[in-house]
Length: 424
Image (cartoon, rainbow, N blue to C red; front, side, top):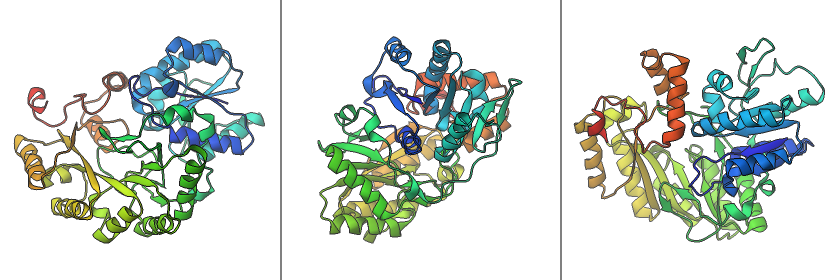
């Protein structure tokens, strides 16, 4: 199997592709021969990437990522098909999971791995090796013999995350990843330590309208012992001592994080780390312990200082709860980063002013994004139901625009009701 890690943005410092790392690890564990071309880390030009692909022999070509790589994958899968007409091309990640039919229609991908895919990819490879049909496998989308796109029922989530091997870090150019400190928002957090992003949990129980959950809404966590074991392995192997927990809601299970902190303190590790979570998932006691165990930054996705806007995106949190959490973080002495969205459906000058007043009241600034509808989200489906995205061409054109325009710092689609100029 040849894996290519495509660039998300050509000018950005690369972030380790944890999802591909896990898939590579489970394939290796099952005895498959896996190699990686990391176009993101190596900053390969397109022709250089194609030269490297031509120099390899492979039965399966695997690629994946976020929706913003859609245009790149259209190009890449078309080129791979020219190089090796008979190869099976598979893709995973939120790009294919959020729009499986359109994705397979518009790219050269044969099989899409939907959502959590470690078990799915092994079953698929076993079918290929044993020359069996794979059309009945749960958790895939594929093109059948008649050329139709079939989306199969989803596979059950992996309950015991400790069963998964750690990502196959050794297959990727770790020297390049460790040249750059991890970033969250626009702030450099790692203080010149070697740093990497890791995942301790999967899934989020909330259903905010703007968010696409590639791990679903069933929350699962690795054991605290397993989390610390990966941190220790990364320190012993690569000298990494700063960990960026990529989990959006790390502290849903406070008992696990509390125990993780105990282990880190008992073993006297000089690790530093940062976490993302919701403001209603922490308390002062946990924050004190997290700081003692090395947590120096915490991020809240606050979204808005207006209760009306929080309710509009089904955030299920009160402004007063956010205020209390922010005060606790400041009292404990952990650095706080926070992100907001402007342009939520129903946003007005008055609700924007409420967010400004919220920031001023708590003497803080934040990172601001424009509320952007991404495929697979509740907001996206609502726009389709309202007839604002009618045909597959409408959908494809918007996704291609997203892939070109980039992040939610740009105005990709105005869903607020405010005029574009005023929103910007």
